Length: 286
Image (cartoon, rainbow, N blue to C red; front, side, top):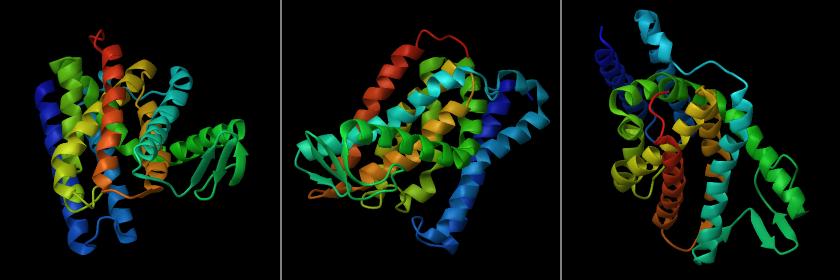
């Protein structure tokens, strides 16, 4: 099978398998945000990687451009993989507070430090000076990013490890990564349209916000992958996004519609994505 046919077949298979699992979960469980849906979602997350492995076994010639091997370059980009999603979370929280949209249920900020009243912080809660609080955020973010990178490995092996290079080589950096972000968003569609991630506005979230956010997130994850030569850094960033970023933003007690915060996070993610894209555009190949 030719390279373009392999890429097309992989994309179609990924959507068919994912959508089948998500619709099955919705039929059996109902609420995609319930605890009963978690096993279904974890299995779904593994499918891009499992399919990639199946394609690599079926067509060994595709193995040459898979970015999967761990290497020492990961050490240099791993802190960025944790800190950027964490910074997006706190930037969103800060901007929401300054705009008067609400405050965090976890933090009470002051010039002298921060009082932590909620959340699973590795260095504990209570009143902390800025150095201790900063260390607490970094250590906690790193811990949960690595923990949540385990289920994210399945997605990132497929998206960034297998598919990204193929799309870049076929369409170029900008078009290739943009296509990957749109495919990634479509892959989430059944659960999101049923209220996952955007329970207050599932249709706008699924068809507008999610595609924008995941395209620009893909620029960031692509930079991590290309810079480190492995999908593992993207899995760590994905884990940070699913853990500390989601947790910090969810701690907001809002006086306005959640759509305000959705839009705010997307805007900040777009800024990060544009910066990463500027670094990527000189890249011709992986």
